[in-house]
Length: 280
Image (cartoon, rainbow, N blue to C red):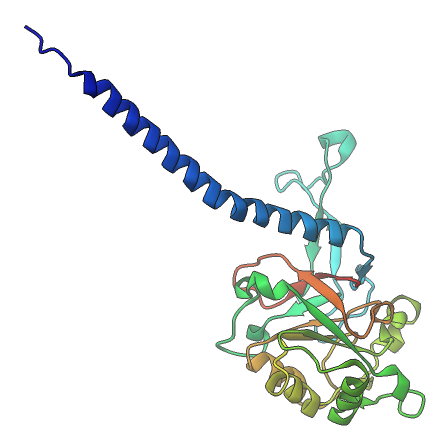
């Protein structure tokens, strides 16, 4: 004969369900604010950014744009069927594509540490957090009337800081020279061997004393020294740089953010990049 259930059994079970439900509600109520806050923080950040002006810091490039003579010009041809060697076309195939043949250091591009350092990290290993940084723009143009190939010095940097405040740790420091205006208008002048650039002492100061994450400039090289001293220093000390930047004259001295990214090429030693500034 089945044993009669105690009148307390149902009440005990109900109590257990009640307390389990209560604990679940408490857990949800505890975690809900943090989840909601995280979402609202991102919502606010997006709304803020969406309302800001963006400045493209990247050049368009093609087969005829400036590049170091040691690399040579890019070749861009229609991609073709490897069996027929016939180019793909929209009327015939429904799509088209381009075959690119070029060095990684082409156009506005990233130089990862491995470009100059045997054991340096390659472009696919640069942390994502280093692709969005506070941006400071150091203006070299005011010296160029008297010295067209002025190397931005530590004294120049300290004078900039006196006017704009200390370069923040972790920043991206970009050197404005207005060379970018020759990219399309006067490509041969853009490729000149002497140009306004960084001094080695300033690059060292920014890395060692200010703790910047990366640097950038408008020229194809960091400096004009025979042994490329500034470029060697920054890359061999584990920092990346962006070369051939554009439109830095449209960005304030400080207060903007830079976003820069590039394809994730395995063990890549450099590649065209896309950079833009979010203005304050």
